[in-house]
Each structure stands twice: as C-alpha cells, then as structure tokens.
Length: 140
Image (cartoon, rainbow, N blue to C red):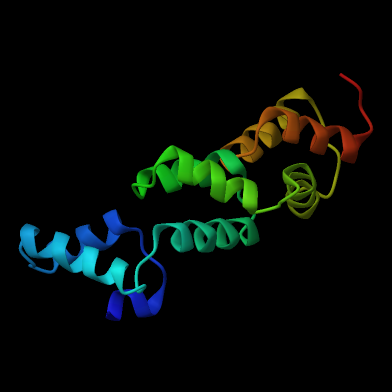
C-alpha cells in the first residue's frame, strides 16, 4: 500500500518491487491481483498518469510508449492510452525546441545536434521537422 500511496505502478513494476522487498513470487502474484480487484492498482490508470506526467516533462510519444512497454503494458492498452491523452505532439515539440534553443543554429552540425536532442526526447521526425521549420523559417 505504501508503494501505491506515492504514485501509480503497473502490475509488473509492483510485482518487481514486492519481490525485491522479499515477498515470495507466489504471494506477489496474489497480492497484485487482489490490489487490482480492489481498485488500488490499475494498469490503465497507471498509463494515463505516466503519459500526463511525461508530457508535462516534455517527452514525446515514442519515448513514452517505450516506457509503458518496459512497465509491462500490452500494446493495445498503450495505443488506447496514447490516443486518449489528446496531446498535440507537434506543438509540444515546438514548445520544447523554443524553450531549449533561443537562437537559430549556426551551421548544419548544430542543426543535427538539435534534431538529435528532440529525437532522444521521443519525438517523431515529422514533429522535429515542424519544430525546426517553425522556429527557423527554413524549407528543406
């Protein structure tokens, strides 16, 4: 209960933390299932919470989806949660770009570094290109 009191956890994360705490694997599965039945643990609620948190931190859809996969959520649940997030990824990418980089890139190498920075944050190439074009007025 203490773990769930701090933040949402996926069933896989919660099982792993309970096992690290010394709980037997058989008992861990029962505990997680019981918590889910009682409404204390919910993978869809975890997904929605994690997505909103990561959007607020400026991460893109590719990275967020990958994190949810690592947390043990099925692809169908991830797709549904990402669609219900209702985020304009291009606008978020532009905002992150403008917040981080105030001046236009000096050269092609600098432009590539900026592209790589946004890609590492999990934005797709179309989002990044829109951010680069929108802030620089350059056509490729």
